[in-house]
Image (cartoon, rainbow, N blue to C red; front, side, top):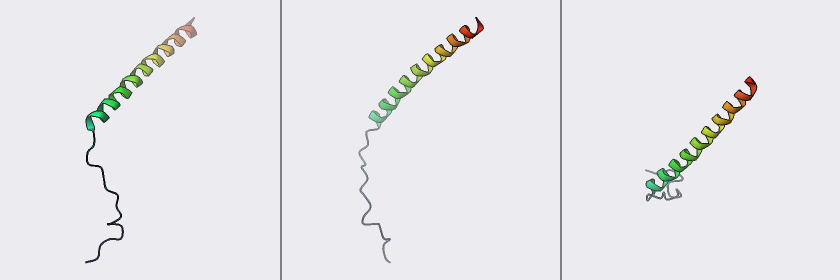
Length: 53
């Protein structure tokens, strides 16, 4: 039975993934995005108050 064309040339996958590092990195980005969202919401509220005046 013949092999498929690219079976020998497939790149080896790296099986030693550092999931803890990836989780920590994503949690840092989530925290920074949450602070950015909070600051944007604060700015929106301030602009709403200036519009009311």
